[in-house]
Length: 393
Ligand code: FAD
Image 1 (cartoon, rainbow, N blue to C red):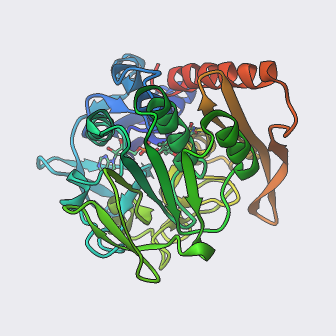
Image 2 (image 1 turned 180 degrees about the vertical axis):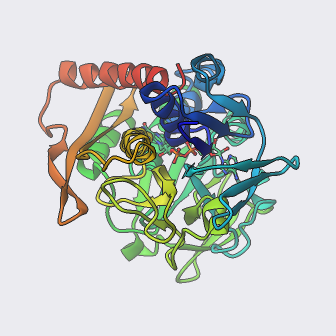
């Protein structure tokens, strides 16, 4: 055969890679392993929290990948034997591969915030993987009394989706302003600056007045302990804050299967060759998306999709005995502050001495009229449709 490729993870990186390998060379046997029959995206899950989209709009299936000839198996990969080039699945099957691609996303560092483990996340959701957690957080918002406090603990860098916490707060504020206007939002942050900060803060002031309070690291914003039952948190300097809805976004690391496969380093993330996204530690294993060390590219769905195309081309070439092509990358992250008010950050990346570096780009202008912001909100929605179609459609 032209070769066997196993892809683990059917999210932004994995589904894109499986599709693009199969498209480039249909003779390659491509197997995609993903436990969920429907993948729910994190992108736009904040809009669901704000009441602007339904939960169902976030779901994508795998019928189109199957139609292309990708063998989709709904199971959990429980082990990788890199020496034997085999992947074992939870239900007992073993898959052999010539090349393996991992896009397992993130896992949480449970108890890095004392008391915040998986059980605690059923009371104080992270909603940083979409699906049940998003629904839980939305239900808690609906049950929150008018005059209550929504408290978010935001993590230090690096983490999935740098502007995500601040878009979430914007969308929660939109919901509260309409439905529970006496309420407050408190963000306790483990850092002193965040993505698109100036634009977010100007937007918050304009649309939500003093509804949102942001407490940076330097002002004792770092949460160190969580009591999910009491819905309270303790900061570094011993201050206790209580909330009606507690949204904890904990520190993160590469999805567990990456560590199991032996491709993570001490940071908990996966170092890769930026030209091919092949692991720096084990040849023949490619890793894309949030799990990788790819700074200055952010951990975004857009980045995962772009990296997957680079890795797919490298794998197709390697199986044909050809060198990898020249890689180039782009990313845009749109955020919604209010329904017709969007902002963005966009960059092109190129390789400099073999490492990813910013080539050009920037954030939306500070001085822009309402029509400009409305257009950016529309571009954001168009981006979502386009990338969902490119990945699963
Ligand atoms: P994922 O999409 O998480 O996919 C990983 C998949 O691997 C999962 O389906 C999982 O089930 C599967 N998996 C894991 N382990 C195994 C295993 N052992 N066996 C089988 N399958 C496994 N990005 C943007 O570009 N734009 C946005 O507007 C945006 N908004 C966001 C908003 C929020 C609130 C959040 C939290 C994130 C947002 N992101 C956004 C970021 C985006 O969700 C991630 O960067 C993206 O999902 C990364 O893709 P991935 O393939 O690395 O991981």
